[in-house]
Image (cartoon, rainbow, N blue to C red; front, side):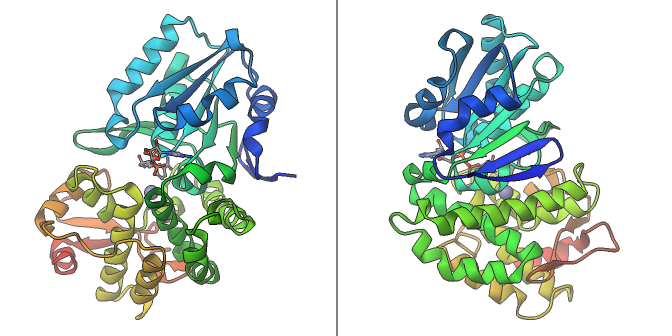
Length: 360
Ligand SMILES: NC(=O)c1ccc[n+]([C@@H]2O[C@H](COP(=O)([O-])OP(=O)(O)OC[C@H]3O[C@@H](n4cnc5c(N)ncnc54)[C@H](O)[C@@H]3O)[C@@H](O)[C@H]2O)c1
Ligand SMILES: [Zn+2]
């Protein structure tokens, strides 16, 4: 039996082999006249037919975008929307997002805006998307000014998590997923962080991705994220804690021209932001060391790569939506398992000078 976690109106189902239930779940939770399966050029050839085979052929289409963050744009959004319009999709259709966070964010945004909003079922295929991106209803595209700057809240009616799909995921992408998992540990559960850190090498080895340990890890991360989102869907306070590592991380991602994966940039962001938290007296001493050790257990980077100018990173941060002139607000840990800023909206202001010291 798959595990079910309810988040508002979203049914999140997690279980080995669940992809075989995609059609019945879509019909049950997102009944529609037609289904647009949106996927990318890597995932489509592997799994799209398995999904489409469970739907009526003349009432479904597979729409494939080129893989990669650089395609999470308004241009791809309009191309997909135009394809659906050309095929005469109407208000009585639904989107099935089959892919990683790029497909999930993009297809979610297509669904959020198509005819003012049609249902979306998320079928995440990367670890990042299973534990994070598919949960919580945030959809967006990137613009040259920064990531996720145009988007909408559009919770999926269902999320189908099948850890067996991780069997084909490249190792580097698996590692990147651990960054978001460690983030959940830092925010809410120190025991979980330690447990994941000690099991990471085994789970990253052959066969580890489809193990039951991986399944329970995904369940725990989804529980943590769903709990936070359920208490603050619109990110007015508590949900901001999920941005830990992302203020610096997004800037690094942008400066790298997306040559670093989202999870890799976030890992560096978490290492630097936890050092920052200790340096300005917000975090208990030893917090950064523990976080960095965990990240390294999964082979994730924890330092700014050579050639990255601190000022370029700060500049990129300003263009990100969380930037405010002179001071930037950060979601910072108090210690592993608890976040700071409960009295100040779950963020802490940091000056550019303090920031520069940590980046240098
Ligand atoms: N909405 C949110 O709350 C949220 C949260 C976290 C991240 N995100 C977004 O998610 C994106 C990153 O997602 P990602 O890390 O999943 O990247 P991604 O979607 O680019 O996927 C990574 C790569 O793996 C390939 N791939 C995916 N699944 C595969 C599989 N099962 N087998 C083989 N190859 C596979 C993809 O084609 C791609 O090349 C970023 O844009 C980030 O902003 C959103
Ligand atoms: Zn993230």
